[in-house]
Amino acid sequence: MVKLRLKRCGRKQQAVYRIVAIDVRSRREGRDLRKVGFYDPIKNQTCLNAPVILYFLEKGAQPTRTVYDILRKAEFFKDKERTLS
Image 1: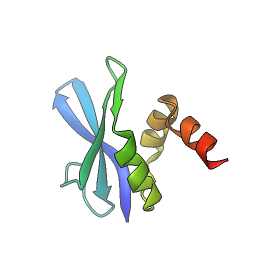
Image 2: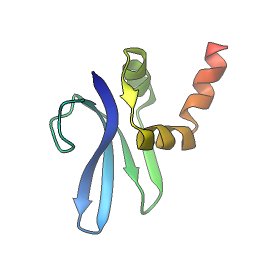
Image 3: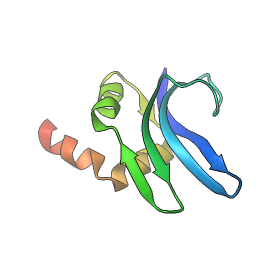
């Protein structure tokens, strides 16, 4: 099973996260399948690769709660709900 989750990068006390598609059995810093986004909680910046995220979600990937919240704040699901209905 594949999940969309955060992978920690950056220096001490200055965490920056990559949003990655990764196998469930891998550890947090393990090898990812694909990098699909970027999140900086200090500057509150988000960069998402929407077509790739949508591809993984259609294939059954489950976002973690934190990644789901990031996607929701970026209004990722708002556009998708309009196309579905």
